[in-house]
Length: 289
Image (cartoon, rainbow, N blue to C red; front, side, top):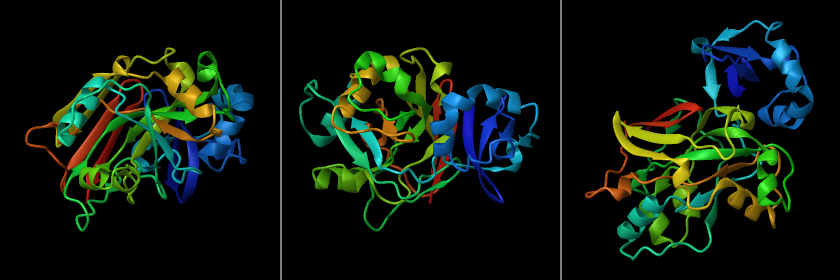
């Protein structure tokens, strides 16, 4: 199933139709669900009732509502994984002027999000502090229940679903300050969407294609099979010392083809349209302003 957050007078949670043309507002049958985190927590007990509710709720044409990020204001910052596709790790090393070394451990960092950017939302260029704005299509994992000290073989039981993330990055800030927080945590640097697709719609682990376009030019084109550290490794390892909660989001890394990987680099500028696509999830489009 696909679940979205949308605005129709007030913010609501909805079930997206299989053809992705309609949304069934859940508040008509489940008034206790006022935000996505409510749905995630209640989902195991109401899953069957949600399926039946489609016959009892008036669907809204998707074209007539405004989609927001599935979780517009995450309770916690996003947990992210850097350099988790080999070719991207190599292009990053080249950009930084260092030799690529295969990682022994994942690179973890957090991404500040005071307001996630939804479908068709604006990414701020922040031209006053950066001129090396970059994009990163990423598979985003949405945690479904409290996850602490979980074994790798149990990880998928703790995942609610998947969505698309675009880890917007200011490369000059990222490298100048020697860490990722400032360069990746600026306001309006976290597009997420268009909706969350439940985990049971995918294989374990999911083998899906990721693509990113800038102004219709294909820049990134890869598959999750190229991950260096897979989802069970990442989520299990994080859970050993960090309690993951329902609604927490983990970005799992981006493949090669980011702007800094080109010679010369192809950084974003105002007016650019970035389209991220992940097989089985959908399309996330944003414009740089």
